Length: 251
Image (tube, rainbow, N blue to C red; front, side, top):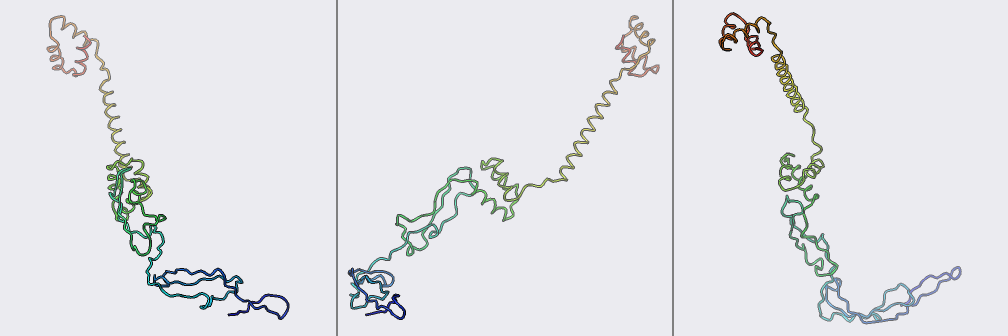
């Protein structure tokens, strides 16, 4: 078979390209095109690179041998597996998590290939795992406080829990009504304390006792009268109790 291959020499001239089939070898071919049945075929290389298919009288197809071959499968990667959820969830800090992974279709990849990459089936609990869990709870409408109590009970530090909750729920808003109520209570308590102390100071003011009353009390005591008798007598005639008590103390 002869093909024309244009090569520039001069205007209006072309050169015919004649293939030169060399390095012919008999090869066993077995792939999807042969339905995974072996065939023997002569394969040659065109030394002149004319770009023409090898003719059947040169690249002889000896037909199938009758032998079957296994398809060549690519290595498996993580996308070829179906994995369960990590367990247990929620988890404590650095707790070991596990999951099961199974190959979805063994006919599309070779799990035994050294280049195959399988998904991880064991890892330690970490902030990323907990953040995903908290996001799921938030999407389900679980209150922030409930999630916070749960994570703290599992041993997560309060600072870490607060950071995760702020990332998912947003920063907590201050309840202004609660702040105002607390402020009013503090002011009322402070007012009561101040009033109590003021009354104590008023009650502790020293009572002025007339000199003649103190003299009377001293004379009565010297005459053998008891303090109770003197007090009763003075109260009877109209002296104020605090004045009488102070007079008795001073005598």
